[in-house]
Image 1: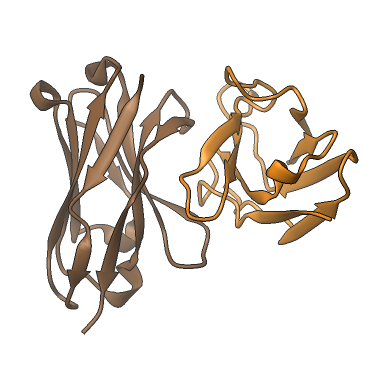
Image 2: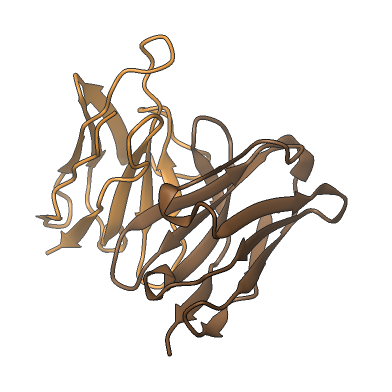
Length: 118
Length: 108
């Protein structure tokens, strides 16, 4: 059974940092691009970042470039999102999602809530 | 690259059919459009319902179908059931923003 389990969310002050993790199981992790998608409270879905199978190609939405870094550890079947310089507008549930090609996401984690507030 | 536009709401009675549109699809990859649709119930993660415009993942009822015409993709839910009440998002490879704004489907 495919499982994606996010962790690492929480309450942080503006300007602070958090590192999100996504533990993958039930499928060959190294065969898939992986993504982070977020959803602000009461709002729609927003793609945040993706990473290719060996981690040497990464893409980020413009609003997080220079602040967020996506990475993966294939030996540990894990995906990460390092978030620095957090802003109030980064408050959202962050989902990791498996990409089966052309930005199609067939499995999603349950999400982890990041709240940026003073 | 265009933004994807969805109606904010749609509704239908049990047993009826409802179609949700997603405008702003542009041709890509040899004129093939990679459009997907996601269902999201409150407090839950999104679920893939349709991909590559018309394909259904295993386990998705055949009441859900996808189509496209020109720059518009559509999701049709036939034989509406109470559990179909949810938010629905389209997504298109190559769009300026991957996801549409979402449509809240209400089963009356």
